[in-house]
Image (tube, rainbow, N blue to C red):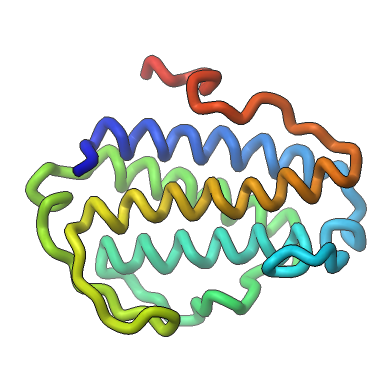
Length: 166
């Protein structure tokens, strides 16, 4: 079981790391960001799109919002600046969601219908944990691709998070 504090810390970490990744990506030509580099989603740009779409789908599952127009393999934005702005809005929404979590909601069973995995029920905390784990997984792919381009985004470890204390 996870706590609200854990989720808030991870939401802050994700916001920080996404800021670092997007800052690094902003210095790359559009064609370089969109070049197929053999990653699971091909390019840096498509991987960033995937992360955004996945977070929006999970937020809609958690909050009862609409998932219209969201498909895990379908990019939302071809324009990097639009993608970055939407990422920043979504990170703010994830943090706000995390700040409002209550133990009884985290413990409650949540049913999720997934095109990839079917329908399954788990305590909500499992799915919340998954969101942050999924972000870290794919950001790791992006940082590897950036590294291959000679770009080091710097420290990525959770204890280095600037606002860890609050």
